[in-house]
Length: 383
Image 1 (cartoon, helix red, strand yellow):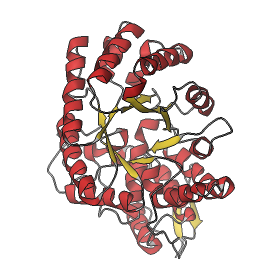
Image 2 (spheres, helix red, strand yellow; image 1 turned 120 degrees about the vertical axis):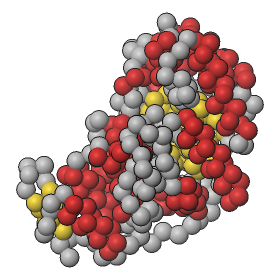
Image 3 (cartoon, helix red, strand yellow; image 1 turned 60 degrees about the vertical axis):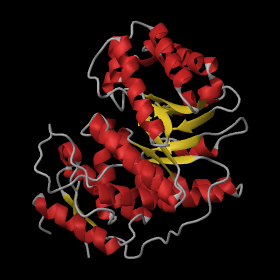
């Protein structure tokens, strides 16, 4: 049946939903790339909370979605930006999420890495920031998960220059029991991170970042780069010490970065692989055979959807991710912690549905159509 979707000019346009889904089945582990999906959390829609309240999480649905990702061979990057860290999910909620997800990963044999930050500390001096990082690192390591050392808003505010980043990160890496992933999140995802690594000049910041890694290469499994700049990521990964992976966090250029070139390639730790999970897994298994062209043929068409979800203000991409999870049947509602289901317009959400449906991402296209029709009617679209 025809859906009438709102367009940017205020009109309605007809769209014919697909009737048959693509078939995705679990497969063998990946051999050529290490791939994580940053995963969203499912809110408890019946909790009596406000946007300022601690997050109320539906733990059963949240863990079920992680089992979905693991079933397709993807690792889960837990308690990251996609899980609304600092945008609805506070440290207490993130710590509980880490413990529960790590236990679930052990139960099913899934790979998991978890975010370590300082979000229990709104602001502080360097000693307090170091202690906050240590507290979170201990929680992740005690849960049996790999640590992803995230950028810190508090450190961005308190640091006087590159030397403070070198001191804080050096201390944390010396303390880490196992190699960690270092995450450089750009200000397009979080404006409070402007000037990270001690400079707003990205060349200077890159130099400091590489200095941290070079001082402790045995404690760095890899780096996740989320700057939405493919050329800068390629240049940086060519300068990494031997054995240190580059995990792309570039939701605009991921097919070309994962495919790589004659001098190397990126692994992946991506928020867009939350809605793309099964399709992304199929593409990586094609790449495992050496078929770069087949990999690109599968993944290149998804970039339009990703660029749409991550359009500025990029930090609100989670709203589209959760919409697609609801439409795909992974949860029973379109509610988000912090009330962020309202962070994108109906026009934006309608386009996200259309692009995802065209790609065949919905296991049950009829269910997705019915749910999209319900959402449209709530906004006053009656035909």
